[in-house]
Length: 125
Length: 103
Image 1 (cartoon, chains in turn red, purple):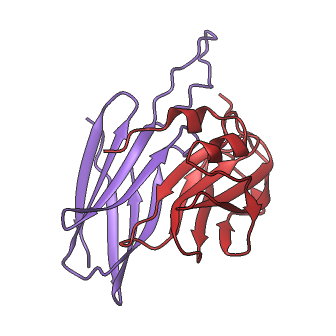
Image 2 (image 1 turned 90 degrees about the horizontal axis):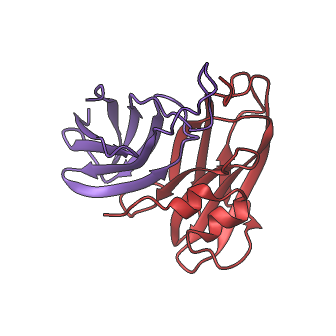
């Protein structure tokens, strides 16, 4: 079974987290990757976000929050049995760009991003 | 032992929409308690789904997934009566599996 990729979750930056999953080139923006996230999150502790793509040969889909202490939120493996479309809820410490990244079998990384404004942070006590 | 997950799986044509609510603290390891001591990280690290016993989805999560995590995905080639099983594992090594029938 797959184990947890510590280096990806320790990474501070989007680029380093994406590299940990085998992306060779720098991530490029793509209209074929879709990020679902609100414009404004009233509660940074629970921010709905989703990643989807219509691209072929996608191996992993990632959700990342640039200004969180570690950028990576979640990684999903795409298989023939599931649609490349996942939704979850994340924590955001402050307003930040949120990234949805698709990593293809040949090591390309393609992304969509959006700024989400947080009015109440999710990482405080 | 952690509380059971709530799993809803609904057939939509030849697909099934699966929605899962897990019960977990998802402590980040960034917060401090009243005495100023860091509260250690405690969060789900791996999530897996199986359709009729066959693995269909694997995911890795970090502490930035919100408390009591929500997950939604769509299974291809699934029909009413099929069984969906969800398993999570956390960084303490605790694990839990729950199953639902697609309706």
